[in-house]
Length: 318
Image (tube, rainbow, N blue to C red; front, side):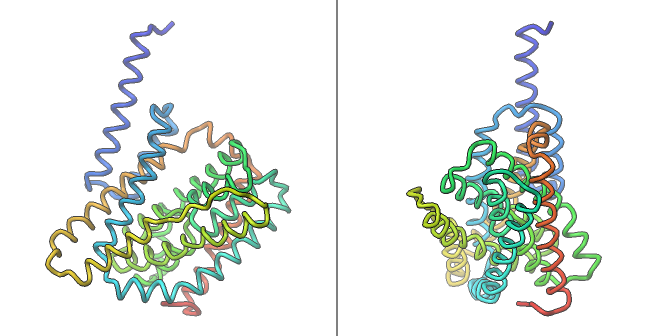
């Protein structure tokens, strides 16, 4: 039988490995897909030593990273992309919700999981699920299943989207718009767009953040329908992203600082992807089940292929 000393040594080794992966991911020496892959390997190999702390750290770093990325954005480009992408985002959200709920009914996905998966796909992945869960009184199992489904598909999208974009010769603007419309979480959108190029990063980040703002109206409507008194949380970090873009555009004297903050944002976002990867464990995969996963996969493919068709054919553009 293992001794207490042996168990303690094993726990210390796992924590050391976790922090080493986090530091390397934040160093800038590895790309976002590599960081995510390393996190997934860690999550599937060992029990996470700090699951709650990792979740909180991931949320804080993501928001801080998005604000830091604003220091690399030109306000005029941000407004142009946000204004042009508004209609596409509204149509995409409506399409995802209708198709998602229909698929959930056809597949007989139980409880609130169908709505949570549809909302996560339509708007911004885990953030939308976290916002909607308390409003519809989702239990822990429903939240876990929905988040697990979304995180798995996020990981796949980050790894394959840049290759698909390259194969189809998508422009920077086209790829950024596609990533923003078809990838769930902000972190994976920015990671994929960053991998593709600077132009894609500007478009992808801006359109995705505009899409994330739809959490508020959807949450308010859902709360009204469910007669819920749960307080709707506003994504204030998006406002700070816009403020950072204003400073970068109109205060040229801090250009060196802006460049450093933008670079720091990209590095910390890579660390976020490592943290997200570590949350995908064997138990999480087993807990998802085939019905919610089938709903998530089919809905994601419908959104990704439809938006890609319209973008690639030039029917929608910025």
